[in-house]
Length: 167
Image (cartoon, rainbow, N blue to C red; front, side, top):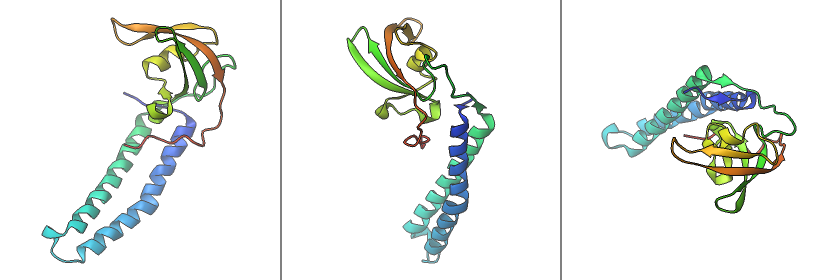
């Protein structure tokens, strides 16, 4: 599946790749060299740990590069009265008689602990483009779903606290 990224997501991913290539790679190669100098490699835990960290960094670089190649860049703009990317949305769950506040984000920024909901998630798909007062149906699967109501939309341009999800 192609990731949907905003221009800001692309910029942050490119910055992470650059940091991993120019800074981390050099540090990790040096760590491997220092551990190798300690002698017998078959029983050298530091060497194996350093190699593992170096390989993990290289794997992350390849993953991010592949993501950028296959991603589609989407706009984070929306109408003032509609739910769009990076908006905080207060929703009312009818079945539970509860309100929750979510921030609608791209899939790479999704984080349920911070209530960041991906536009690819069932709730994200249902509320994107909705307006205050709209009652939307969240389809969980072919046989199940539920209704919620949009109570408030807060436009947000501040992405300072956001970060790309680490794997």
